Image (cartoon, rainbow, N blue to C red; front, side):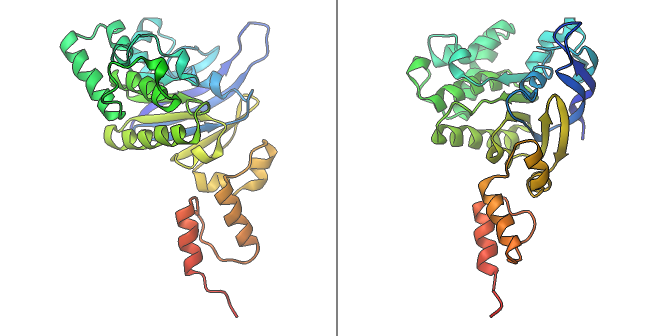
Length: 279
């Protein structure tokens, strides 16, 4: 399977004499993969996110996005069509007076012909569950709806990679659930690669693979089950496993023979229903 993003020995600092804020980062993101980058504030995860679509360029090393080295300035527009970003605060991304105008904004800048643009706008609006809100003023929408408008604008560009930088952190539980559910559906239906930047360990359960950053370096990498059953390593970087995983780990310490890989309420309940304690 082809790599959509390849980061090779990336170092970055803001000024020539300042310390590096990213140190020797190497990673790949495959087509259709969901990668979560976890870390506390100041770990470098949001800085790293900006390299995937050439908002930042390496001080040393290389980032290749959809086959293009991000150091090639003439290709930045093309890179940003293929690698779309959705940021933390939806209010900072909405620029037009109606939902349909906002979804169309990026397409207009990209010079997409009107008929194609119209089809893409309404297709994206429909996929994001915003049908009927086309003429609504975005500032009147809920937080979850606003973030779906931002996602619709990104999706209309037909990107190969979608980068979400703390895109659910300002949403209430209902809005967060809405957005995550849509992302899962998009990943399956569109085969889009998703890179989620977050400090929320529960959201990371949805991913295929997790990278943990601390002080600008990758300190752990693996599938969710590997990452979240290693409580000692999580503790060293100030993270805790999701609550459901903590419960499963504690039950194992009390000799309840749960299988590895219990990452959801449904899996835990199913395993406990099969458990027959020795009298």
